[in-house]
Length: 155
Image (cartoon, rainbow, N blue to C red; front, side, top):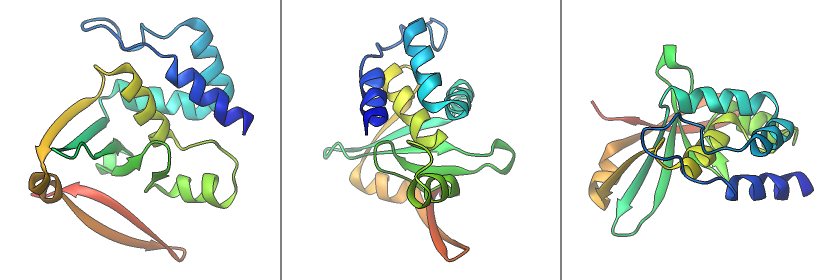
């Protein structure tokens, strides 16, 4: 639990990046070192997702309900549904976090948390409740007895 509290503290201490500045310019050296210590390779992968513009925050109006859509494998055009503190629809979340408890979060959750803290890096889309529901279709996939859910844009 101490590692999770430390991670929450570090993310909460991140100041938003200023417009036009390099993506991670608002992070201090201490924050980067702490994030790398806590998340190791997951931090590096989350940074890569953010740098590729792979985090989308979808906000329903007027409720303010939020969900993140985070890029998975760019070659396969995968995106995962992510609630940064509680859930991700990726395989690693179920295997490494839920089943084994080996990590604090997956790369998609960390990317969503960091992008949210850095503000300008998140593509923010506000939409009415009906648009929010219509924007996504839920697909189910069974793999090793586990159901995965993720959102894809309607075509």
